[in-house]
Image 1 (cartoon, one colour):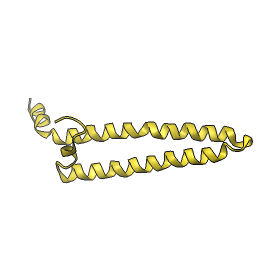
Image 2 (cartoon, one colour; image 1 turned 60 degrees about the horizontal axis):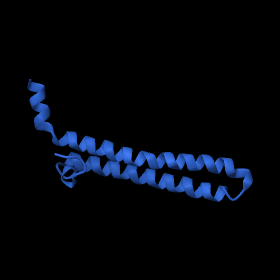
Image 3 (cartoon, helix red, strand yellow; image 1 turned 135 degrees about the vertical axis):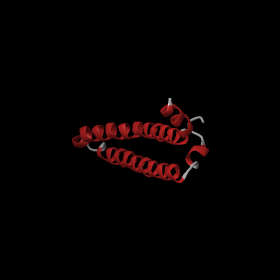
Image 4 (cartoon, helix red, strand yellow; image 1 turned 90 degrees about the vertical axis):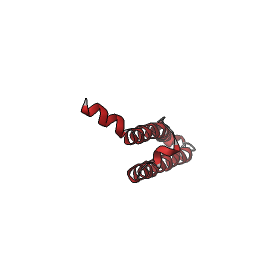
Length: 93
């Protein structure tokens, strides 16, 4: 069962719930990054606030870097949820 397969998120009710929770977090991070960049853009118009604007851009960039990390963690969790037979076999050995 490979990662990033649509079937993984539909495998069970728990998988659907996990997928939904991660989508909410992902969307929140997306809005946060966009807000940081938007506010930073406006602050960049004034020389007095350019340092703060730069830090907002850095924070927004960090938020954008979190997005693929969230996707990977979600997919690994979904993968592990669907791999119960292999886990059960390892536990018995």
